[in-house]
Each structure stands twice: as C-alpha cells, then as structure tokens.
Image (cartoon, rainbow, N blue to C red; front, side, top):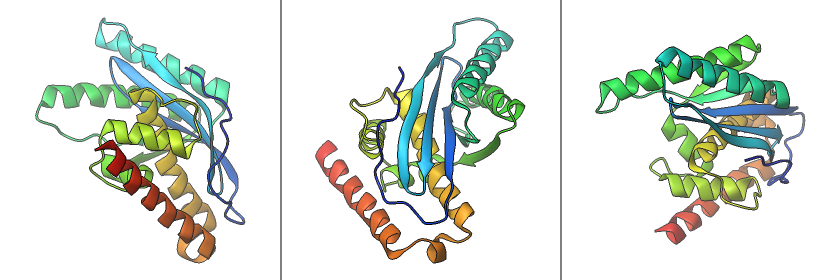
Length: 206
C-alpha cells in the first residue's frame, strides 16, 4: 500500500522547518511503516505499508525487517524515525521477540544516520486520538482524518503513521524551542480542535 501526498490538516507554526518522519510498528510477522511530512502543524502522508516477514529462523526474519526498512528509507529519505517503546506483557516470550524486531528496526534507522525517538503507546494514542486507551480502530480512523487519506489504513500501517504523527508534535516543540512560547494562539486552538475531533470519533466508534 502506498499513500502519497494526501494533503494537510492544520496551520503552520512560524519558524518550524519541514521534516520527514518515518514511523515504525515493529513485529516479527508484520512490520508496519509510515512516512509523513510535517511542515509546522501541517501533516501529509508520503508512504505507508507493511513489511511481511516470512516464517523462518529468527536471524533471517530480522534481516527481512532490516532490509525492508532500509529500502523504505532509501526511497522516502526521512530525517528521523519514531518507534513505540516496548512494554512487558503477560507473555515474556512475546515481549522478547518484539524486542528483537524493534532492534532490527532501530538498526535500520541508525545505519541510515537517522535520529530515533521512542514514544509510549499512551503518548501515541493521546497525540492522535486524545485518549490514551483508544483501540486500534479508533487510531485508524483518526490517522485517516488527520492525514486526509482516502481510505482507512491497515492496522500495522496506521500504528506506524500514528507514531510518526506523535513524533511530529514533539518535533515541532523541539524545533521551536518551547511550544508554549513559540506556538501562536492558533496552534493552541488547533490542539483543542484535535481533542474535540477525537472525542467525536470516540463517541461515533462506540
């Protein structure tokens, strides 16, 4: 699945440079990726999809992730990468395997000299939906709306795009020095509008 240049959503913060961000949703079976371009608060989807990892030895599966993301990076030339922080779930073995996939993904970004930022699942959901306990469908719908996509993206690609969107918020803050000072009242109203939209989506999805 390729999604290119789907428009933007919000007004620009003065003095914030345009940046291209690769979001990664790692997994040993499917690794989602999403590339967005952020110009202040304007967001556009450049590319998104899923790297399907065939069954086999762990090292070979990690190689598929590494090479697949290297190809995505070479094609889209992002300046930074964003990936979700790992958490320990009820199955330690699953957590360990996820950690292996994350390691391969991070190595692909580092090998391309990208800065890598990590975000918790709570941070990602709050940034995209405005609610830290949002489910996957709610994230998918909000990603579609925020990036003006024609269709709801697949779950793995949506999670990767959501991570990139979360990082774009932080990137704007870092580049402007202090969002509370550098962003205008228009930006604060924009964030309030995002939260309001997220609440409406949540009501409609339940």
